[in-house]
Image 1 (spheres, rainbow, N blue to C red):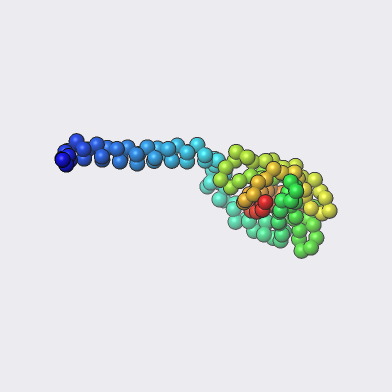
Image 2 (cartoon, one colour):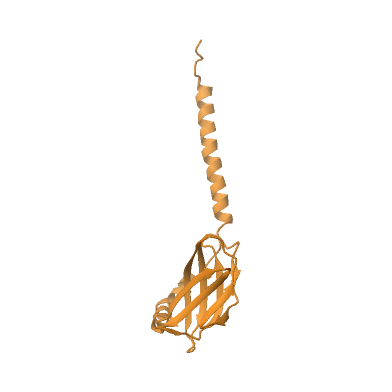
Amino acid sequence: MVKQITGWHVFGSFALAFSVIIGVNLVLAYNAVHSFPGLEVKNSYVASQSFDADRDAQVALRWDVGAFVEDGYLTLNITKGDTPVPALIEQATFGRATSVAKDQELQFRRENGAFVAPVIAGAGNWNLRLKARAPDGTLFQQRIIVRVAQ
């Protein structure tokens, strides 16, 4: 004996399907809002007013910047040509690109012309968000991608 599909069966199927869709969307929206790390600048218009001049001054420094992690230490090389630059590190934050939960504020020490700091880093891509000041006072800001293989 074959059961007949009634209007209530169709309504129930549609209600169940849309409940699942709406439920998944609510979970995704909640996770998106609660995992957003925040604003980069308080007022993007004000920050944009000096962007070109700041970028040109930073490019004029002609610094080569690179970083790598080995044996639990991050080594940051700032050079101009082959010469290490005596920069003042104002802020260095090491963390994942997608979350600020495991961000580490680094305190560097000079070692053989490079900057070295202890870090806790698993395998994968990490970001080093760096603010350094040149001897002439020019602010240098850059996000350096650090790939850690393990």
